[in-house]
Every structure is written in C-alpha cells, then in structure tokens.
Length: 324
Ligand SMILES: [Zn+2]
Picture 1 (cartoon, rainbow, N blue to C red):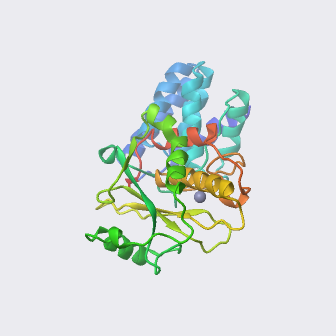
Picture 2: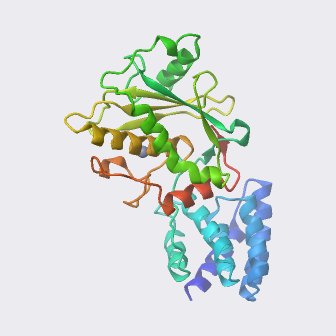
Picture 3: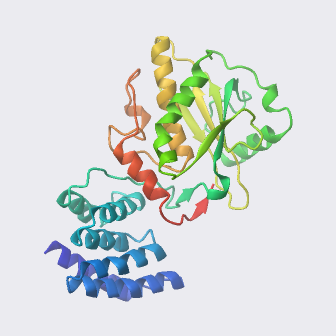
C-alpha cells in the first residue's frame, strides 16, 4: 500500500517537473514508462527503464528508489542493493525517500547502509585520468607554522599549495615535534584498509617517494584546534586544475603510550584517506571507519565496514558533478 502511494506521488512530481536539462526531461519520460511497467508488475522491464532514468539523472532519489524496488521485485538483489546505496549516498536524513528506502532495505535484508557523502550537494570523485593516485607520505615533515594544524580558508590553502609547488619547498620543511620513526609505516598500514577498493578497481593508488606531482600529501602536526583531533584533510575543488589534497596527522599523543599513538595514527590515516578519495561527510553509524572521530576511543582499532564500502562503491558508480 505504501508503494502504491509513493508511485502516485512520484508520478505527479514527474508530470509537474520543470526540469532544466534535456537529460532530466528524457529521464522523466523514461521513468514514466518504468512506472507503467511497474504497475503492470513487469518488474524486469520496469527496472530497465528506471536504471536508464537513473543513469541520466543519478542523484534523483525517485529513480534510484524505483530502480531498487523493481530490481528486488525481479529477484535481482545485487542491482537492488546498488541502486539503494546510490540513493543513500545522495540523500540527507531529511529526504522524503529515506524512510521508504530503509523499508526496502529491511524488507529485502540488505546488509549494508551507504550514507550521505556529498559536500553541499556536490558529488566529487577522482577522475580515472589521475589514477593511480600518487600518495606521498612525508617522513615526519611539518608544514610551516603559519599553516600547520590549522583550519585553513580557501585563500590560505591556495597559498600553501602554491608554496608547496616551489622547487625545494618540501625539502626545506622540518621534522615535526613528537614524530617517531615508524609513524609513516602506520600510515601505510592504515591506507591498507582501502586495498579492497583496489581489488574491486574502484580506485587505484600507489605510494611515491617524491612530493612532485603527488595527488595526496601527508604531513604531520603536534596538535590541532580540537584537543582530541588526530588528523585533518585539506582540499578544495577547482574544475580548471587538479590541486593536491593535504592530509595532516597528529604526532603528540602524550600522556598516552606509544602503542596508543601508533593505533591512533593508523586509524586517523585510514579515515582521512576516506575523505581524500571523496567521502566528504561522516557516517552516522557508530562502527564505521568514516564515523566522526569525536566518537572514537583512544587506542581502539577502527576498520572499514560494509557501510563504508557500499558508500565508496556508490560514489564511484555514476558520473559525478566534478572531479578533484
Ligand atoms: Zn573525518
């Protein structure tokens, strides 16, 4: 009964839509055919229409919802799950599609829940052209004091990125107070949490020894504006040029033991890398690697969850608004 009501609601919204783009209009026409097929219980046919509409307009929740519903009804659980993840990826908790989508998830026993990962509604990923992403993990280097461990605004970040590009700039940086040999290998270990994404060919990345041309640069800071913060990711999106993303990780974990410090660095590196590859929000689910670090306990170990995986899969499964 609930489905029937939703069908009507979407049908009306499609009919009244003033879509600005031709793609959106075409998607609307295709989706109407999907609704007819769905009402006639031709689920496989309906799914083909909704999948096409969703391809044309991937961040329209109604298309993803019906692509998911029709796939589940047709017995194709994997397709249904992927469409559901794309819906969760682009919808905040206020979306009218959130509850119906969660109903579907429950009804069809989907074991993972992707989460909202866009920033200001903008869907951003690394382009294939940039891969494998080159990651430079500095051996303890700290940024100049004016920038280190700070919440930089766009002009400050631009200035820093321009400065880092200058020949010899990185080489002139000093080792961060509190840095211990072995911290860099914790970063590599933490990024290993994302190796499954290499195996699934969602993204590819490699470690490089030089900062020149690297896509992601890892530096160190003794502290951050918030006392328990273990790291931060600094980036901005400019469609005209690719600029490196900067990750900073904390070095001073006193009064905790070095085992706690190592684990915290590993956790923070894995988490910040998730931001650097496009998950621009925090998961609302406590056990996920991408949940807000403020809820973490010192020394505990955090790992990629099925929710994190589904989110990254959805993020890279359709055309984004822009690339890093
Ligand atoms: Zn975060």
